[in-house]
Structures are given as structure tokens and as C-alpha cells.
Image 1 (cartoon, rainbow, N blue to C red):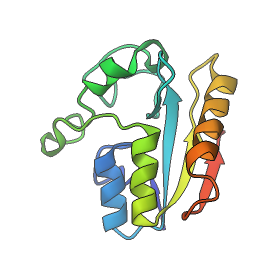
Image 2: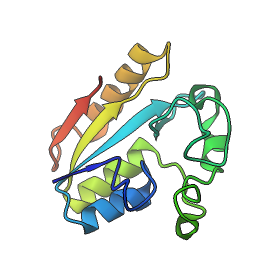
Image 3: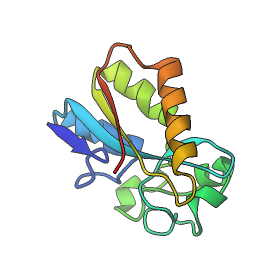
Image 4: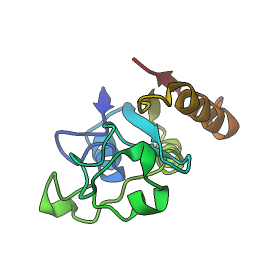
Length: 141
């Protein structure tokens, strides 16, 4: 079983709460989306804008990570998840490695940053997790 954006039917998508819930529900793989922030931090995020899944507004690609980190990525889903932050790729991968869960890292580049986002994702994964203890797939469509 593969969790989609974590366990998006049970917890806010692309959050650590969502990843934890997917593991709790028995997922052996988890798919999540990555984007680059304005200052080139890789974060788990699906949409081009912050509006739908956080209390912020604007484009992910034009917002610094420090600002994104302050946003609430959980309350839109349920008050039970109030205060859930937007995680980094590193946080997600470290958790999956510790849990022994496979990762399907989907590159969801913002318009105009496709090559940059794909290259940054590949570099980050190759430098720290590729060939490690969990299976990994990089996807984009």
C-alpha cells in the first residue's frame, strides 16, 4: 500500500502528521510532493500557491522558507492539526528512513523552475539517501 501525500484522507497532505498517519495505517511506500522555496529549500508541497493548504497566501517559489515555516499547514484540514508546519524534504526522508518506509518523491516544480527543482531534488537525495536503507523513486508528471 502507498500513502498519497502521506495519508491525505486522514491528516493534512504533505505534512509530517500525514506521513506518520500513513505509516500507522500500514503504508509501505509514501508519495509526497516537493517544491523549491524562494531561497531554494526543498519543502513538501503540492500546489503552486500557499492558499489552499496553509494560512498563508502567495506563491511557494516567491516565499522564503523561514516565512513558510511559520505557516499553519494543518488547521485547514481539522482543528486537531492546528500548528502543523510545512516540512522539509530532509525531515520527511529522515523520518521514512527511520521507519523503513519507501519514498516516492514527486517533483512538483513551480512554473519556470522545473529543471532547477528536479536537479535540486536529485542532488539532495543522491547526497544523503540514495542507495540507503529504503527504496526510493523520483517521479514527475
